[in-house]
Length: 463
Image (cartoon, rainbow, N blue to C red):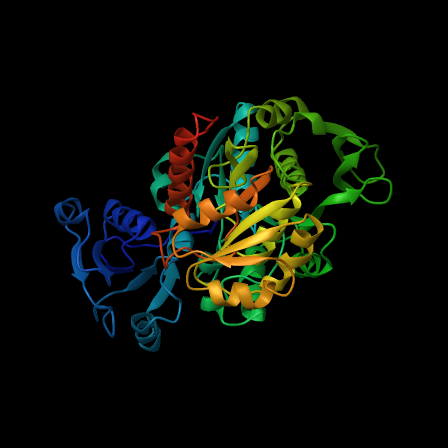
């Protein structure tokens, strides 16, 4: 939390970006007595009538060279690059430019738990929220998942925990954003189409710890010395997850139980592994991280167990969809980078045919080869990145190309006719063929449902 909220009363604020975050920020500015000009490159917004009724001025169409000259503050949505032309022009004139996350967090009354990472953010954020809720405490979950933080300000109270999925795009534009608990789950190259270099992406992620001090907590993976070094730099108390509890304090496995060990103490059992309903060994790491954060929020092991037992995962995150002709089909459309796709493949010990491709964001597709080859796997390549996928993986495993997702599913099922897994794990963004990863995942599930119905009504889950 910041020490003081941004004062927008009676002031003109330019909000750049008309997505969910920008709309929520515009409403918050109006609620706090400010005047808004909302700028977006789209020609139209579905919310136009509502915004105009609130007194919001709209500047739609091509992105302008500058924001209105009398704007005292610029609030930018995470989808807008931090170096976009109007933002640079505003900075050059001395205007403060901040992100929606920074703006909203300044008004919060309760403590923030911020969760970032290259994969697993949404699952872990959701789990932490469920654990705190199970303990009977007040909690709001949002940020990069579900509800923008600006839309939660009115419900914030001093005893409300804010569990905030925090992306690198949001962290680029923070100033005072101060989580009481900050977790960086993992790191692998991603979003290089925007950050340009791996180093820039890493530095953006590291900012989650930037405003922490000795009164705060940093939750970090035991296996990543680089992340631990970033966290230690700002003085927060560290809790590692995935630790060897015989050697180190933190959260790890004691036999078949996730446990918490404190300095010079004995491990305290929290959650039995048998209670975890999620597919994939990597998901166990997400549960351990969630347990670490929930423990810091005062949640008991019994409450953690109740939360975990009722959680079967998020839509589009290693989501089981159906079984057709002996092959199990899984939707992991949220696997938008190579590391996430690798983890998805490694979640299975049977032959896997992976549907890979979309808009390339960086990373080495060849890393998918060893786990696929070890499982007698293959690849169906789709989208703009299909040539890159074929070039990288063709020497390692069988690769075919499909012009549509429908064709890709049919090809993959033909390759897995004798059983195994068909896995949508694109390792890419979706914008060449779909609106977003969720649109891609829903399309995959609809295709699978049609095929299942045509082949005799196989089991289908449409979550």
